[in-house]
Each structure stands twice: as C-alpha cells, then as structure tokens.
Length: 627
Image (cartoon, rainbow, N blue to C red; front, side):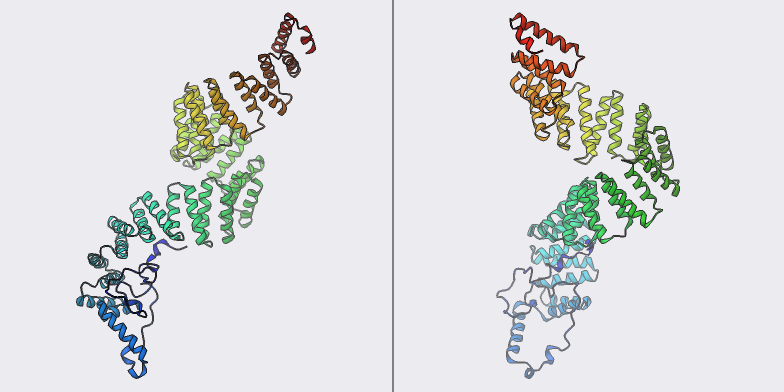
C-alpha cells in the first residue's frame, strides 16, 4: 500500500515541464531543439527526488571544433545565445546539474551566484527554495518561495511548494492558506486539495479533510492515497457506507492490497451489507489464506446471513489450524445455537475447558441456555461473565433480558443501564431498556430510549425499525395518534419490506376515521404482498366504512379465494350483502359462516332475524331457499 505520507504529486506535475508548462516570461520562444532548461520556469528534471543522473564525463570545452560537426556547433551556439537572451546564467544551469546529482549544497551555491547576477530571476529563487528544503533549512526555503511570489504572485506551484513546507513544519493554518491560494489558481489540480486534506486532518478538522480528499479524488480519480485517507476518515466518523465506496474505489488501483479489501469488508459488515462483505473477504482470503482471524470473520458474516452450516464450516477450518483456539469454539457455539442448542452449549463448555476465565465463553453459554429456555442456568452463566469482566456489555444485556423475562423489571433496568454505561452506543441495550419502561407504563421514558436507538443505529438497521414501531405504540398509549402515525411511516422508510409498520399505521388511521388514508396504506401494502389475507380483510373493512359496498364485496370475495374457509371474510360478506339489499345471497353466506363456526349463537340469531324480516315482507321462499 502506498503510504500517503510518501506521496509526492510533484513527480507528476510541479517539476515536469512537459506535463505542466508554465507561461513563458521571455520576448521570444526558445529554439525548437533547445533542451528543457531553455525555459526559465522549467525545473531541470521530472522529479527532484529521482535517482541522480550520471554527470557528463567529458565537458563541452574538451570537444574540439574539429571533432564537432558544423550543425552541432551551430546548435550549441544557438542554445548558448538563447540562454544569454533569456537571462539564464551558466551558474543556474550548473546548479541544476548539481541538483540532479543530489549535491544540494553545491546546487544552492550556484543558484545564489545566479541570483547575485540577476536578483529578479524567479526560477533561481524557486530552485533555491527546493535546494534549501532538501537541506532541511525549511525557514530559509519558505523565505525563498516568498521572494519568488513577490515576482509572480500567481505561481500555482510555488504556492503548493510553500504550503507543503509549512505542513512539514506543522504550521497548519499558514499551510492551508497557501494551499487554498493554489487551489484558487487552478481548482482542477488535485495536489492542493490533497495537501489541504492532510493539513485539515492534522488539525482535527475531519469534515474539512473529508471534503478536501473528495475534491482531490474528483480531480484525479486514480489518486490512491487520497481514497485511502478518505475512507479512513469516513470510517472514523462511522459513515460506513460512504467509507465502503471510498475503499472500493481504492481497490481498483491496488487490487493486490489485502489491507484495502479488509477495510472494505469491515465497512460493509458495519453497514450490514453482508453479501458484499462476504465477497470482499473472499479477496482477502485469496491473498492471505492462512490467516485464522479472517476465517473467523467469514464465519461471523455467514452467520449474519443465516447461512449457519457454512459459518460452522468456516469455524471448523480455523479449528483445523488450531484446535485449541478459544475464540473459534465460542463463535462456532454462537452459530450452532440457532438450530442446535445443546451442541452449542457443548462448544462453549469446550471453550471453558481451555480457558475457564473467558467472560466471552460464559456469555455465549448464557445465550445458548437462554434460547433453550434454561433461564436460571442462563442467569448464572451471565453472572459468571460479568464477574470475570465487568466491562463486557453484552453480558449485562443478556442478564437484563433474563431478568425482564422473569418479571424483575427494576433489576433488568439496572443491567441495561450498566451495558449502556460501558457502551453508550449499544442500540440493543437502549431498545430493551425502552421495553421495560413501557412495561412499567413509563411511556415518556420509553420513548426517550427508543429515540436513542434511532439516533445511534445504522440507517437501515432492524433495531431502528423496531424502535420506530415501539415508539409508535407508546405514542398511541399516550393518546398521541398523529405522532404515532408519523413513527410508523418512519419505520416503513427504514424497512420497506416489513409488514408490521403498515398494519399499525393503517389501524391508527382507522381509529382517527381517516379512512381514505388508511385505504391508501393498505393498497400500497397489497402492491407488495398481493396474497396477504389480513390486508384484504382490512381493505374490505375500510371500504365498508366508506360505504363503498360493491368494492368491499369484491375485496371479501378475493379474501375467500385466498382462504375459502375464512370465517371473518364470510361474515363481512354477509354484512355487505345486507347493505346492498341482496338478502338471498346474504342468507346463503350466513349459512356458510354458520357451518364454519357452528357454536356462534349470535350468527344464528342474525340469520333467523333476517329470515323473519323476509317473511314479513312476504318473501318466505327466499328464507327457505337459504336453508
């Protein structure tokens, strides 16, 4: 991986006249075949740090006129003449040769000699600054750049060189000012933005650094060090999806760097993008197949995908390398608990036989015992874990869940508070704290706990979804239905493919008699779940409330198609047919409903009452036909 601290954009731009020619300051252009130094602003080589070029073994003076062809002598004369016309002294050119050979003291002496002849020769001031910087005489180098800027205040590269030196001296405010000036002169150059990012990051201004690295990568899409630092800062700010994008871009330019793939994996895992995390981790394992910890991570991701058999295989792969690896036994037990509870407990016992003081192993055993409904034993396991490691938050969470299950609400709150004190961003602990408070009818406090989950959880996290649901329920209990409806709508935004929020929102709208809105909620839900029977029933009920009986009848018919033996659908169909004055059909529907629920006396009474009405109306044959 390229170390960002070693990154030197000057190799590609600052000193490469062929890539970034500066505006000539001369009355006439140099001869067509003149060497690069004929341009007064062009430094002598592509990179000041490039390997030294071998000095000429034979001087120009040693070549006799008889040995040099006439065209070559004419060319040499033109070069020398152009140098005199343009004010480039021989000392400056000699200094450039010394600089190329990394003899910076001699180069500096030559540049100073050139400036003694012509103090207005700006390229010599720039080269003085570069030589002084190589000699670690940074303050003098900055002074030389300042002198060059008095001769041309719009020299992008001098501002950049000055900013880099100020950055090295940790004079961050001055460095940022110089680099901002460079970016003002050319906002499409990546170098000023990249170094601004370094300075802002060093100052602790992470958001400013993120914006600067973003600009740098927009200017130069293959700028690997900027992508790397950009991703690191986004990850540090827990902006994991954005960090994953940055690392993903970086992997395009360094596909063999396993550390980048690992960073990408971690961000995708934190974003709960487990499928892509697994793909990224496969690249890590291709490059580092014997690293046991990566097989353990593979198992964790597979477990999150509910691919438990594959997760166990990954842990077995790690245990094949080290059968006494305690963490692998713990993780294997956590994967097995989903389907093989007793086998999971055996894994934790194996881990405890290897390391009896492992708080994590006691925690895992507590989880497995809890899920097999062995509550006293589970509580004992969690107590062991918290005793061994009082700062292990998951054990306090597990202890609180058992105490809540045992109706020890006050003790449960203490356990959840301990977990939160250890890990303030522990969404599950906040969620269960809210549940206990709601159970105690302390709804305002419960809402505050749910809001904390919403604040700290990842945007699409299931715990955030559940917190919105529970907040809505608490608001309903506080007689604040309008706010509850908003909470349920927010829950849908977090997990659009979950049904509960839509059902709760629709029911709340019905209570407020906002039937048209409730109908819209159910219709949107039915677009996703076309065969969801409770939704069809609710839709029919709302249409009945709106006195849209024909549509309600069609809805109940659809429900009966889905489940012909659904008693409620037949009952509602009877009621709608009565409203439509289709008495004979209503009686037949009542007869079917009666067969589905033969012990319902109320239904029998309603059917008998309808038959009596028909007899009074002189239509006894209709009531008889329904028998």
